[in-house]
Length: 339
Image 1 (spheres, one colour):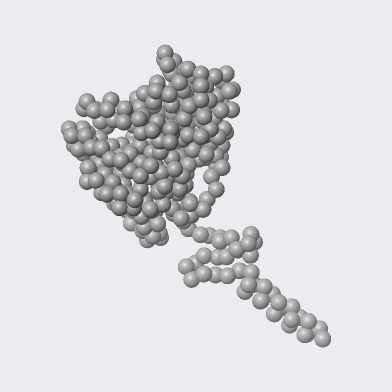
Image 2 (cartoon, helix red, strand yellow):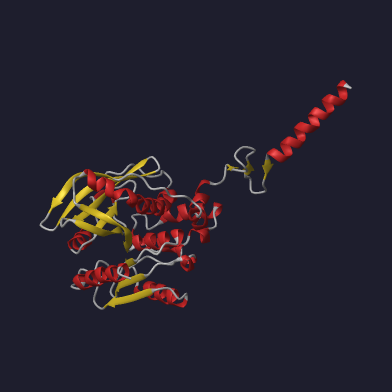
């Protein structure tokens, strides 16, 4: 009888092991703890568009820090919010006239960290919008401004920009509490949020619209919209090593991951928001044909999209048409928020 009991005991252990821990062909391990939570999954799998779409982004408190500028009709502040346990700084512009205002989240393009300053790439536009009756928030992103350091993995650092932008948007629900703490008679109107993105910031804005599925009215200036990783390899000639290290990084990434799952161009059909695209015809950073193709693709998908091109204009719209681009930008937001 004792031998039978021992035999049955070992059989039970084997059965429990078989059903409790299962090894997959690709090397993943299904944990017996946590209702089938997968252990040792490749870490960047959490940043596919599908995975991010299923992620809960809770937002954080917003802390308004020191005043940076005080003008007749607006005031600028350094502010902070959090992505997980990491602090992110940013530039906030607030109208001075008491009232309730929409919020525009402004997402800049690439700037070398060595020359970066708070709100770089959004400062002029943010001030204009604040003068016209909008609160603007421009996150610096991890590793920039007074933000905490980002990931040591360059690819993860890139994908964290989408997470940061979404956490910024989801933190806006706490903005009025932060404004009240500064004794300002200005509030977010609790209903209207828009996005603005320039260059790579346009790619981030498109990613946010795809991942969230929200109807945030969005203005894009010369957006990077080509498939990943071509969208970053295109710029390799600007690097000191002519892209050698970047190509190695991308090649290593492609060995472990399906790049199609990380490409903004593959999920445009998820977009539900109205979009306005502005493109300089002499842009040397983002070719006009990129925006032409983006507009045509969105129209074919029956999306709500407007498109304006500017003869003689460059990537930053600083050859005379900036006032027109900003006037159209402001008008687009007002028309969508009034619907």
